[in-house]
Length: 534
Image 1 (cartoon, rainbow, N blue to C red):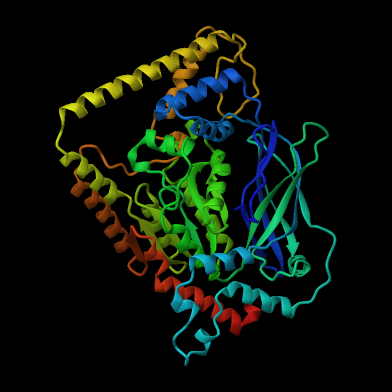
Image 2 (cartoon, helix red, strand yellow; image 1 turned 180 degrees about the vertical axis):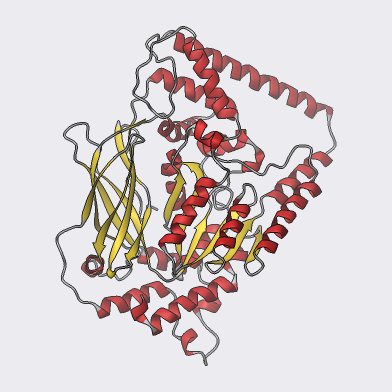
C-alpha cells in the first residue's frame, strides 16, 4: 500500500531529476511559533553512455556473482545502479517550499488495530488509582496536537514560505527556511486533521532551460522536548549481511528485494505511536537513498529523516576516519535538539557500538539507552554448523564444477564487455563514477585500464555500499568471534556505566523495554500537564 508520506521519484525514463532527502524541522529557539525546515536535495541527469553503463554493470555483476541473474534481479540492479552513473547537475536553481501537511493518523490507527503495535498493558491500563495512566490514549501524539489546535484558532494564510537554493559542483543543495506554526495548524484544520507530524515540501526548477521535473519530499516536525530514535539501517533494520562479505552485500544491495529484520518495524512503530521521532543514519552512499527510502516505506517503518554518506568517491573513503560520516550526522541531530533524549540503535557488524559509546561519553545526559543487534553470534553459529557437516565426495565435485562455471561465465562476460567497448571508439577513456562532464580522448587501452581501476574500486571491501565491517575471519572459531563481541560490549559498559548497553537478537527486546515506554509516557504526561512547554 502506498503511504501518504511517500517521496515522488522520477521514473527511469526521465533524464533529469531532483531527489529531495527526507529531512526534519525544528522549532526556532527565538520564536516558538516558527519552524526552521531543513531542505536538502540532489540534482542529477541520467545521460551516461551505453558503453559505460555496460562495462560498469558487467563488472559489478561479475563481482556480485550475478552474471546469469533473472530478469527481475537485473531490472532491480539497473534501477538502483543508474544513480551511481548519474551526472551531477551543477549550479541549478530551485525554489523549495512547504505546501501542506501529510496526515498519517489513519495509517497509524489502522496499524495499531491490525498489528497491535501498542501492548495490551499500554492500551488498557490496569491501575485505576493512577489518573495519568487512566487518561493515556492509544495514540498520545494526536491528543497533544488536539490540545494545541484548541488553544490556537488562526486564519489560513495563502503565502507559502520558501527559499531559493542553488546546487554546488556536487549537485547538492542544502538550506533552511522558516514556516509559521499557524500554517501547519490551519493546514490540519482544512483537512479535518490534528496530526501534524509531517509536512510536504516541493522543489521547483527555475532555470530557463534543461529543467528538472517538480518533485516532492517530506520533513518531519520534531518538537524541542521528547525522545528521538537514531537508527542504523543495514543489518539493524534491513537484512544486508555485511559480515558475509562483499559479494553478499553487493547482491543484497543491488539485485535482491530488500528484506526487513523481523520485528523491527513493529518495535519502531510502537515507539512512533507513543511520540518518538526517528532519524535513520547510515554509512551507505547517497545514491542508494531512493531504494532505502522505498524500503522504509514499504516495510512499514516509521517516517524519519535520512542521513547517508554524501561523498562516495574511492579517495574520500580511503582517507576517511572510520565512522566519521555517521558520527557527524548524529552530532548534528543532537546539537539541533539540545533538550531531547536519544536512543541509539545499531548492530555488531560494523563499529556502531564504538561510535555510540563515544557519543554517550561526550553527552552522558542525552543518551537514554544503546541497543546493538547481535549479527555476529548467528553467523558464527552458522559457520560452526557448516564446519561440522561431514564432507561428501559428491559435494566436493559439485562445488568444483560450480566454481569453474562461475569463473568461466565471469570471464566470458568480461571479454564481451571489452569487445563491446572496442567497437565504440568514441567512449571516453576514463570512467568517472561521479559523473564529470569533462571530455576525454579515446585510447585503445584506456577503457581496459579504466575497467581495472573500476574493478579495484568495487572489490576492495564493499566500498560501493559504504560499509566496513567487524569481520568474522574465516579462521576464527565461533567462540573467538563471540568473545571479541562480548569484549567490545563489556568495554563500552565500563566507559558508560550509567547508560545501558543492550545486546539483542529478538526485536521484542526493544518493543517491550519498560525504560523506553516509561520515558515516552513521561513526555506525554508532562505535555498534558504543562502544554505551554510544547
